[in-house]
Amino acid sequence: MKKMIIIFILGALNLTFANECQRDNNKEVVTCKDTKLMWIDKSDKLVSLKWNAKNSNAIEYCSNLEYLGFDDWRVPNINELISIIDYSNTPKPIEKSFKHFANNDTEDRFYSSTTANTQGKKNIKVFFVEFQKGSTNRSDVENNGGWELGVRCVRSF
Image: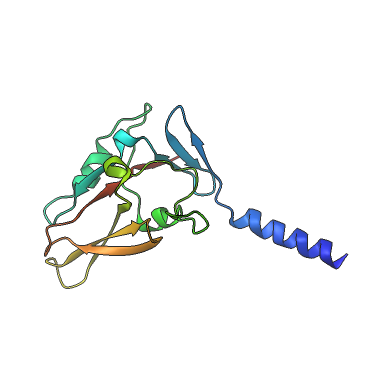
């Protein structure tokens, strides 16, 4: 009886923390029920762009995107990007439903819309996820002019 209870509890925990994402191969999107997010996973819609102190090409790109009849695409915040990290998936720890990366599938670092201002307006940092490592990092957009990183647009449903 104790083994059955333990197995049941472990099974329930696994279901609770399982990432419920599903790929639609026809539409080339990944929909995650637990976060209520729809992610674009179409190779020609995943781009590499710069983010600098004057503007964010990433935010502009997603805001102006119309795909599958939706025009409410946006750059995900850092927590939304972290939600699709899956350390059980190697070599790139991203949720298994995703198939494509930006820049001909070579760019595995993706911008978030999350920024921090660490030393006044001249030191803006933008956070991103490195899916090669499954970690977060930040780019100093003022000093280095912004790195060219991947942009994966998302929308809420």
